[in-house]
Image (cartoon, rainbow, N blue to C red; front, side, top):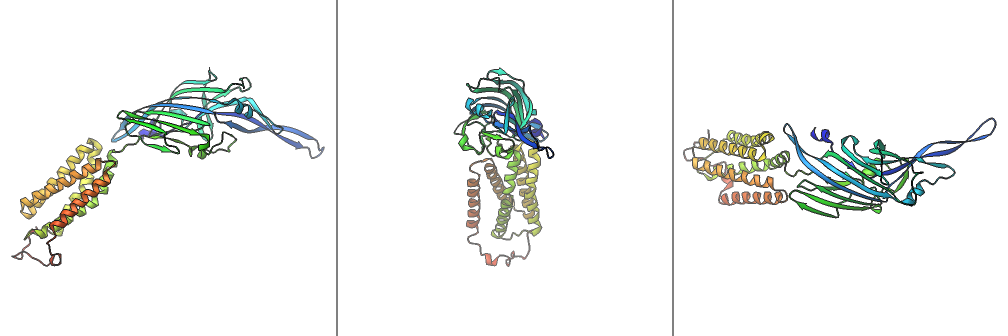
Length: 407
């Protein structure tokens, strides 16, 4: 799969400060009744930043493999922010049962997949560059870097700056892990589609792409600023995610699917028109086998459309399939009924109908309106043309010489 090989959907979080702890327990000797104090490894403490600013600039291109095409992106990501000094001091506070180890701390950036990073140009804490390795936090893969919290100044905030490029496809989401999270994204894709827990507070659209801005507060999410161990699950984190999807409004499979949805309606209306036409034209009758052959031709149109559109594009495929269908049915009716004028009229009506269907398929916001209007026009035309037809006598009438013009 193109998407899986390029990176798939990506999730970008914000740095999480984690510090190891030790738990105190008392062991009592059953014989001597002496007690021994034992400190064992405990669950780590996690702290989220106070302020997070994420800037995204994604370049999008369409990759093809065989008959399939998928939009993929390479996104430049800049994450800046800070941990509140009072929050860090509170994190390091020990008590009689818990000992916090400030020299065993780590800053971790949760991601959906570290292996799809294209480059990591900066991983700075308090202006100092650190070396990042792979890690894991809250069920996410992570960029991880150790930090000695005992050696830092607890009066000033603990700042961070990360710059990297990440590749992906389909969607790009963010985790609002700051008490105050701001995200600014510029996506070079003409079809915006926002999804997730939060919608942007502002956005701008252009032919070359769009930009959007989000602002999420701690109060807006169901994840605390500080927790211990596994108190916050991966699913709880994912529930707060928001972002964009590379929406493809009119790819060939969507257009083919929409065409097939109109298939039964077009076949039924065509049969109804044929039925009314043969009773409006004196001496003309069609055999059920002829109805069957016309129906098979109408159904084959959609198969031909799908097969061609995988190789030459939807517009050209539709033109070829529609022209072939109209020509086939017109020639068949002209030969079967020996009435070329009526056959030409049927061909013109079919061509107009499939032309209107093509307009509907290209419409994104007005497809239902155009489809409803087309159905109304066809039914109105059919009703007006047969308004004087005595349907009670249909089936009992024969041609003057008792013959049938069908083959």
